[in-house]
Image 1 (cartoon, rainbow over the protein chains, first blue to last red):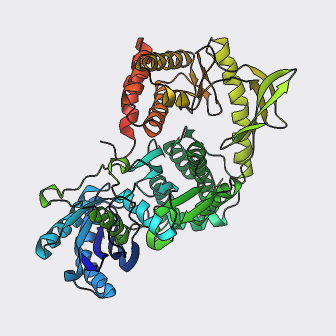
Image 2 (image 1 turned 45 degrees about the vertical axis):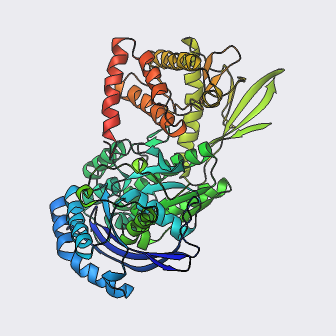
Image 3 (image 1 turned 180 degrees about the vertical axis):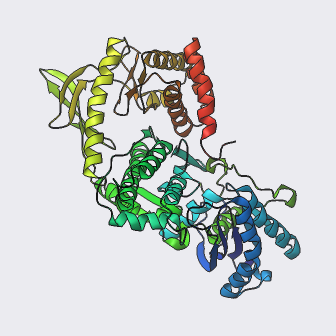
Length: 356
Length: 205
């Protein structure tokens, strides 16, 4: 931690590999008047590096944990070197190493945690185990400047409506079964769409060319949603009646229906809490149609929507550095013997010490 | 007079034949496809009226349905004076009374489910403590009729989640609800199903 008068600086390395993206990021937090003891931490954030490499299986296939882990193992050193070069610093400038503790896929998480653990011992700096979902939320807040938004977190493995209260990111609504991104990915496999750059992106392009709305199951329970029924329904009609519906119309109808469900539960959470701000994070948050629908909902209730672009929506290393560096500033670190990973780590299990 | 602007309806207080009533007007949502929007708005308008009537026929305290106006998507129902259960819990200091109220919630849900009425949006904001001290259930827009243990378990799960997110450290409150709910074999079956539903979501411990 560098200090200049009262000013404090924290430089953090973030390693993320909970799914098929491997991300390495480096950020610098500056506290011009030192780290405040009892107010929320809002350091000036400077992104020094944000590099990423994605493992893509062939069309029609999903990614398997062991293949993803192998990808991460073989790529991480290259990415680390790239990140340090981009940041124009050396490891001696680092104050801490942040890695994803969970949630995510076991083997890829382990592969990255091993590297984080090794580097922390080699370079003799603290290790910070970070919650992936909290990383998304903190990065979104830092980038968009949203102060206390309702957060819709949508990705391949997660679908949650989150609101902050009492040092906890509380989950107001979530999926009762599969995540939205998982549903999109699996339907892309049925249609044999390419996995490059991502299955969801290709569904989005098909949907843009669709126009006929096909009625699909719509399942909202309170502030929760369910996607498994809609997936089996659309898989069935795509396989059994391929001549009746075009892939474009199927993608269009799938998006329209699922996104309407997400916007509905988000709006219900906003009404429930009385919030006017909404922020969309996670890989599916890149989808322009989802952002557009969310924007329209927000406009109808005099609110505002905040979204991030591909650099931050999609899993990345800076978001892990961002959340980790905030915890570090509050004195948190993970001893080596506790530096395990976990596939199950709920957003609301993190004590958000850096907020009030 | 507009008394509440919810996510999908405006709630007005007005008078019909000299009687104070609630007019709940559903509005369409510009963000969703017109076909889907019509299906949801019309479906929920009808379903809310249907479930309210079914509850009343089975002795469950709900507002009386006065009129349904499909042209304006408006449902006219009896006005119930009183705090929501959420407000009541925050204001209440008497543990004994709180326990009795949770027991009452459990009994009401048991009764609703035994008549196959699934509320679909159970929260502590959707129950009103009326002047006589009876809990009145409202907001049946997401309701459905179903005999499946799965649907009933999910109904309870939605309420459990609402308790956790709205009332910190409220585990014992919801435990009281479930205790009263599980008073026969069928509802014990639903409680066993609730265990499955809890474990099904992702990233759970």
